[in-house]
View (cartoon, rainbow, N blue to C red):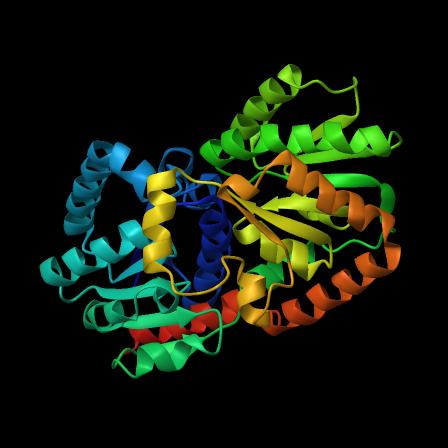
Amino acid sequence: MSKSVYVVAGEISGDTHGVELMEALRDDLGVVEFHGLGGPEMSRFSSGKIEDWVDDAAVVGLWEVLRRYGWFKERFDRVLVEISKCKPDILLLIDYPGFNLRLAKQVHENLPKTKIVHYVAPQVWAWNRKRIPRIAATHDLMLCLFPFEVPLFEEAGLRSRCVGHPLVDELEEKRIEVERDEKTVGLFPGSRTREVTRLFPMMLESARRLLVDHPDLRFVAAAAGEKVARVMEADLAKARLPQGCVEIRTGESQALMQTVTCGVVASGTATLEAAYYGMAYCLVYQVAWPTYVMARQLIKLPYIGLINILAGREMVPEFIQSDANAYEVSLWLSRTLTDRDARKAHSAELLEAASRLGGTGVHKRAAHEIALLFSE
């Protein structure tokens, strides 16, 4: 008998995790009918039954969400109608908590027989632990990436399992044996158009400043997709840089993290990827000021980078808001480029911290936990 799963992922990283989990579910369960919202990989795997919406859905910060409230409300209502029609056995929510936690509450009320699973536990431990009992009341299973998350949800009565971080499987598959090029710096401005628009011009200005003292440097910039690449190419055309000193490559970020000597990385999943490969880097983060002010009131942790949170100290320098400027970033890069011993020590620390992300087989473990719900 066919099983039905409605999946919702709202970012590029969720699309990558989602398609791997869908494949593992089919391996475990046999015939599974998938519907929902995700990215290009999930859409291809489901023969179009999962709509690719990530380019529009991936926004950063409360202010940006509020500006597009009408669009999100319309999509939310449409998803509820679709779920009510197909009555899935399982609603599988992949990260994307702002949208997905509201969806879980509504589906729990409308379709109590549909079991609700969240893959990539919302980081409420960072900004609002009081929400945990409400999440427990609407979900049937929480799949956590880190061991310390499990007791937080289980104490509220929610069945929780630590399956490890899905990045580990994906990054191991993309590991290459190569020497780092000490004359090449990586620029990683993020996967969302809006954050690239904020950060990439600053990264290019940092490159211009570095070339004054390091004229033999070259730079490679990672574009998450063709749409982002076009935005980056437009920024590069306006930058005051020598012809050919910056190369934009699409879909090669993991390879670049293993070949450059150091880099600048936008806050997000890419910071964990960089740490996993031991690339010395600094973190940069910029959002609309209303979003930042509100976030600082809510978030009680001293760091925003997950690798720093895992380490319990600022292992990776964090340049946030006005500090994310070309002067500060180019200064850090210059010091890192000229101090080879410090750079190697930084790399070793990152590798040690990233080892806490767990072992391979994450998607299979997650699929097994979900499959158990079908037999209950």
